[in-house]
Length: 520
Ligand code: AHR
Image (cartoon, rainbow, N blue to C red; front, side):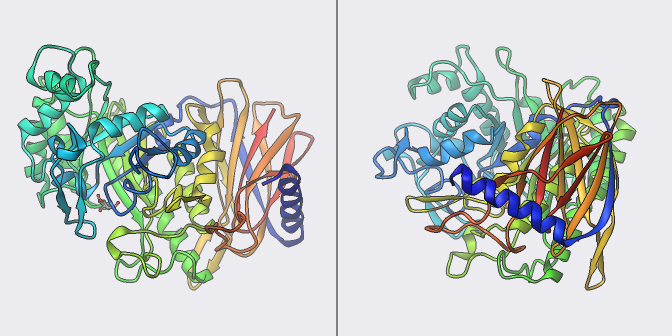
């Protein structure tokens, strides 16, 4: 889109905001009280062997007519570089517990095929394996988050994978890696010891898994300066007893089993009724309220899991790792139900912003997250159709929010009005703020009201404010989205609607929109 067009959109959006503003909200940013850093790993992504998440979406192979860099789509790589993907979780998900990593190394033509029984029963030819994934990470400057197979694997299989990837020494696995063309080991920090082990990862109970986790962890070694950050599977989102069991095991063993546990996983999807998830694009205001109310539950989950973790780990050594989250809707009509391919609207943008604002707020405990998923699956950044590619409203939130990566979180007090529909009441706004390494303060605010603009007065306690600029993600309707072959309906536009008077910033956010301000 041309700059002129963007400026016109920005001006229209600001005007729409002023005309429709319903109520005033008050935001105080404690610019002098920042102490915790928003880890960039909060902006991680999840890429599972599921539908076209890998094949077609990322991997097309070197001989493809689609432009690629060593088999990986160049258009997708270019787009992902712009959102600074810090970490990618792979190969699943449920897929991880049927994945045997040795099937995905060596000459591609001789790799065994398998059936992806979790996701559509399609043939998996293993052409995207360890080396291809690590090449993706290297091309994007991302760290890998490997999810090991406990469900159908073995301790030896997982320990060998660690050795294959990270050992520089003389041993069978590094020799195998060298024979496959990679001399130097990779650095691999983040390692999930199983996925959803209460369900598709092995149907275990917490006590059984805690023992399995300890056994596996013990044999996953740190080679040659590589330090593994071992992540335990969590239970169902509200299974607080599971958290208690793992933390208790940690207390019992950490004295002699150093590094047994570094992170604890929480998975939570924005779904109200798993049997009626609803359309990603054809929805009404009451569905909007349902999605936003379900999203806001993330705060309670973080608080309650953190409270248990705090009783064992007051120093916050162990990270809460929200390594699967996001909207889960019905698949697009006519697509394979096992492929989880869904469109993405301004509702997704606001849901992403609300979650990210919460992760900022609790960044002293939340150390890494991965939205599900990166390309073509669930709440994706990018959708592809053969050689076409589009960027979703969620992508634009991630792009706009890059300013918060590794910045110091500034606590906010938000007195927000509310909005109500169908018996559900939600706050009108969600906000977070940070100060980056150059001293710039960034303030992100989402308008959760699907129908009305919202005014807000902001002050920065402990800082002088002399100038403000901004960007906005907005659109004509709450279900605005980008479509293949059409001009973008949702993108980032300049936001000129914020003014400063006597140190108070005043702005009006359009309905169903997300704004980020830079304050100097
Ligand atoms: O993201 C899709 C699936 O959701 C993952 O494979 C699984 O871990 C979760 O239940």
